[in-house]
Length: 357
Image (cartoon, rainbow, N blue to C red):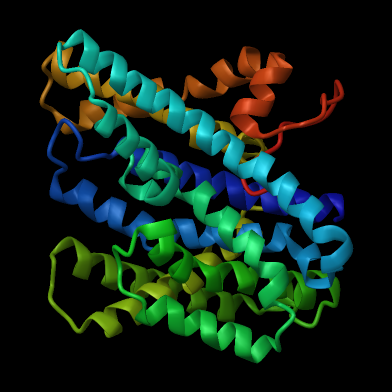
């Protein structure tokens, strides 16, 4: 993959991880989330994870031409290290913290409860203490099946994945089935986008006229705002219409982000986005620990009930995850493996492995 493509993908991941970071900082945990923050979070959630799965598909483009007999098992092994080793590491750490707190509060867990914790982690990842790790779990399953299903004709694969996206109900959490069904289509679109756009240039997005980009941007913003308004205000509409709107938000949100990247390509802010994109895995995995410390500090210790102060504190303290990772965790080979799934010693000039690589 050329350096220019890598840079552009890092820009997109930079925006995406900022959205994840903001969404987690504006949590309703500890303090009720005001309406304006709720609306902001629903805007973010309408497309930001779809964007990550789309990028994951682009970065996994080699599965389209994979020789299953020769390469599949080695491929799965590498993805297990990359995705599931961090998943298990963070899950064990968070569960261990819960066990310690319960011991301190004289509420020790029984053997049955401990077994249920492990069962939840393995089979129902969204229901666990660190439910946000569902992304790594779901992405591993999608990547594992993608070399198999992409051997089928593209029309069948995309049609079936679209139907799964719209018609599979939410909250089927066994093996993260609902998440898998919803996000598979974006991953596959990323795969085929890589093949037909980045490789063969059959789709030339950059040649789209300024007027067309403006119209698409306005439509994207209107659609995302409309959907977010429905969710925020809990307006009752038929579930399959809502699912279709959700799917379209993902597609138009992805397009909107690429239009924004193209628009700001000459600004210095891209250097910041590229940096954040490179450390997206670090932010995704570690920011929660710093943000939860901020939440406890503000709402419980300092007893501050102002949500804006709560939110800003979560952003500021949460951002400490980057220097913690860069100057401590990544200095040790064992931590790079356990927390980021990195196997080989990086060279002096090698950039950190970012989310979706």
